[in-house]
Length: 66
Image 1 (cartoon, helix red, strand yellow):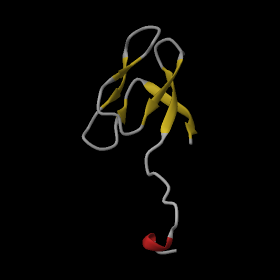
Image 2 (spheres, one colour):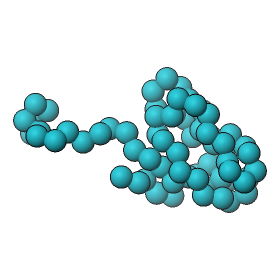
Image 3 (tube, helix red, strand yellow):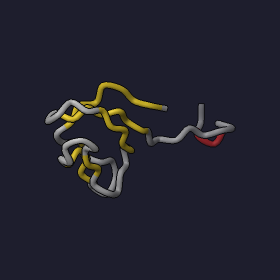
Image 4 (cartoon, one colour):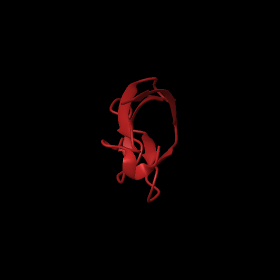
């Protein structure tokens, strides 16, 4: 289907459930984050903003939300 024919466009961004490699805690981050996200338990940086899609460091992505 053409882009203009879609009545309700779907967003290209998603929320991600990431698991910290350091402590194993699960956090929810935005895949186009503009601010570095940190783990709520140990404080290590999980997401590095790059101007577009964020680079996921020190974390694994077990699931995508929405």
